Length: 331
Image (cartoon, rainbow, N blue to C red):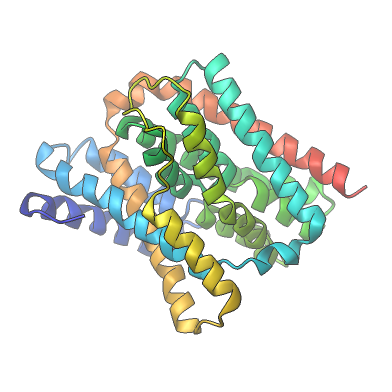
């Protein structure tokens, strides 16, 4: 995590893009800070800042701040979040996540012919919590940087699509029932920030309950990391470094679990949990800015059509599945 002199310029560039994206996000709520940072990064990283002198710092900014963000996210999640949803809510999230992961991994290998690591990253990113889940799973399964970046870009763009679509179709299809619309949004939209953004476009109690459904998915992140790490030992790596037979859970996932437990049994000061929320939110934007700056046209061209199709099929499956499960569990 040490910062070297040749990294300073790239780190400052990534922070600058992140700050601009955060400042602009209130004026572009349909995109949000994360998606805006990634799109700005892609454009700038392939035009004004394409020179390799920026690369080392951008890669550092892409990798390490998000790890801290994931770790302190545990200060905003408690085991009681699950109780708020009731058993039907918990069962809905478990079925939604499990089916999404299995479907995305299956279709990734059988239809889109992507590497096993890419399929697992897509499964985790869509089923759990977007780029944070991908950042957690990637080192545990031996995924390469290109696999990670492509998955994050695809999942983030998929989240933007849902951010536009669900506020329109959700209330209509679910008869303006705020709890059911919350389940749809909280059970499908990719990142924590995108869930909040989507919920805010609907309004009402959805703003309160959609993030709670989402937090249950986040609580299960550590289980997904461990299971995928075990599965990866049986898969043949294509681009990435082969994971060892011993499961290694990243430090920030362990820290996340510890903080969730502490936050569940100890009343923490609001200033601490509020600061943790802001840190997680901003470092998520930094992560997307770094990914955008690192994502070159060559990478987009080589896998763009495949992954865009992959992402589109995935979100259609997620929404149809969620609507089906909601109907089944409420009747």
